[in-house]
Amino acid sequence: MCGMSQQPHNRTPAPSAPARPDASMSLLTHVMDHSLDEGYAEASARREADGTAGLPRTLKAKLALAAGLVLAAMVVTLGAAEARVDAPVLAKERQELIDRVQRADERADALEQTIDRLRADVAARQRAALKQPGGSQGELVSMLSGATEVRGPGIKLVVDDAKGSSTGDGGKPRESSGFSDTGRLRDRDMQKIVNGLWQSGAEAISINGQRLTELSAIRAAGDAILVDNRPLVPPYEVLAVGDKKRLGPAFQDSADGQYLRVLQESYGIRYTLSAADELRLPPASSLIVRTATAAEQQKGAS
Image (cartoon, rainbow, N blue to C red; front, side, top):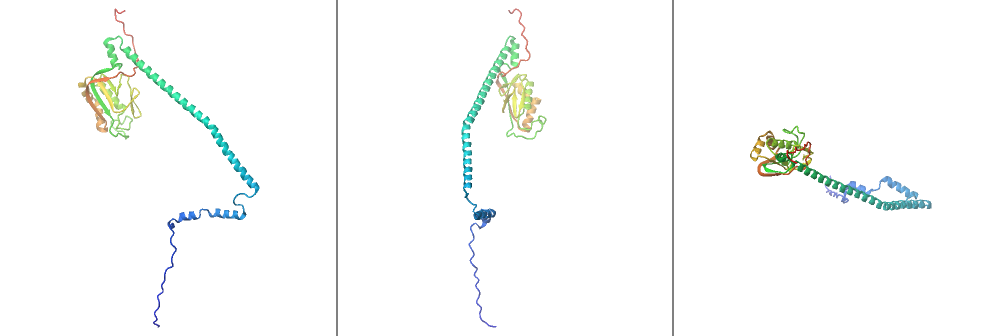
């Protein structure tokens, strides 16, 4: 066997084409390179071969195209002219409607002012009528009915909702009240507080400046507490005129005072109770006289 040395074969790989920078975006590259669908491209090529591509070549086709453009221009021009003509009319109608609404609002405001003035006049006449002959009995009736201002010692009870109160499930002791937010004071709670103060010996009561009478109603409208149809906002300041030494302890020992304590301990409702040397309760805003009799004329009076 021949001992000639065999030259090694150098296999140098052929230089490959450099990779495209957008090689990783093959789908997007394909869309950009072939933006026209193959079917559309074939149809375009066929039309060019037939001589039907581009603008019309015959005079008839050119005239038809010109007529179509003129017609489209006329339609656009007429539409713009009509809109320009209708614009002042629409603006005028809109302004008339705004003026009517403003006049109606002004009439409503004037009527509300008239109602408030008449209501104040009626209340003043009722208070004046209660002050007429009757001596000390008339003054007592006037005070008890809430027709006159009351000054004297008593207690000040400030009740407020729980901190960060939010809607939750109802529970004792208010699960039968129909309210779900146990961290907020409700109309039934305020009713219990007021009734407890009356039973404890209060002679006159007001809530946030609203004087209570025998006919006062405490109701709810949504989340708001209404006293004689006037909404109140927390904190609720309840002023009660009476014996300041006995009224506070008597209320705290009553069932309604214990109910308020349960609301504080269980639901976080806050309240403070303090005695006051001098309280001022305004007269009731409106009084309704349901029954009235003429005072008997004293003997010897002309």
